[in-house]
Length: 403
Image 1 (tube, rainbow, N blue to C red):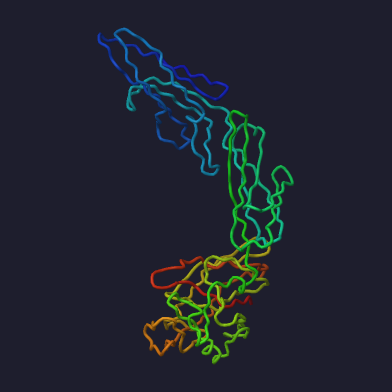
Image 2: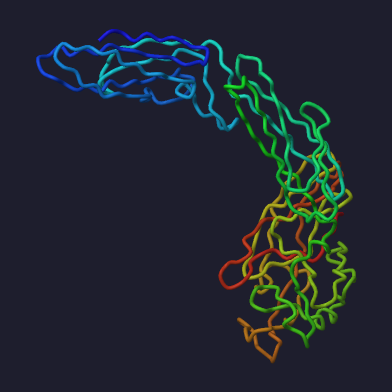
């Protein structure tokens, strides 16, 4: 065997060649294999098989065998850029009969590389329907070569206007009527010569918040005693009784004072959505204070989840919100009611009296800390599983107060 000779081409490819000779007296077959050892900094396995060939030779016959190792053969995956990159450094090419055969080696040194150019997007502020925000992308080039003909594009959800205002800046308008939710914006960067265009993509999330708790209400937790089937708070057909609530002064729009903290009870009439089952919604809350309190309860089981408080300067703070179960005693409640309406003949641990389940249920005052030096603009409720077996275990928020 003669040693391989490596040559770099304009397409950044290496050709490794060996001459294979049958020195025996019988026809034989051999399988030359090409292995590549990466620089230590690449963090790759010691040797990677990059090609092989099967050669049958008569006695005394020789044949030249070549392996073309293109840019992809020298590349490693870069998760941050979501693409393949060639690292600078010394590479060893080995052609051998097997993975354990020392074979013949040559070194190839890569001194310049296009790297893995990528685009980064910032965290975005909340955006209400009808608002236009500016999105500025940042190019990251970790290679040694200047980006050739870089081009960046930004796309949003279907129907969202996206207008470029500079090489890496866009104005994005949230259409009027957009449903509150989180939406993805995707930036795509392409660069390089036509025959070697590299593409990188990244996404960021734009959140459209609910304007208030009432707009986010997704559960009906209060019914009249003569229309008990018009709501379902716990997934078992139980609801708070409007009659029992009124006996405690809790009527639509009333102020409920708990330990000196005033809560405004929802204005929704019985049989209409009146509370927010916490599934990660972002809701506008304006003002400042030291504490954000919720008048809430948990159904089917005690629940807990992370609350994110969002501030006007773009920062956030986080805390865990823990809600005891409305059916179980133990925690100190804000309000206790003597019975609930039952659309189904279910009354675990209580007494079923027609459509009344005589069993104490509870609402709680739950709080998370707030930085008083920053202006609050919104809160993101915990994300909890909505459908466990036998009911709906979640935190139900009826009112919130920043104080």
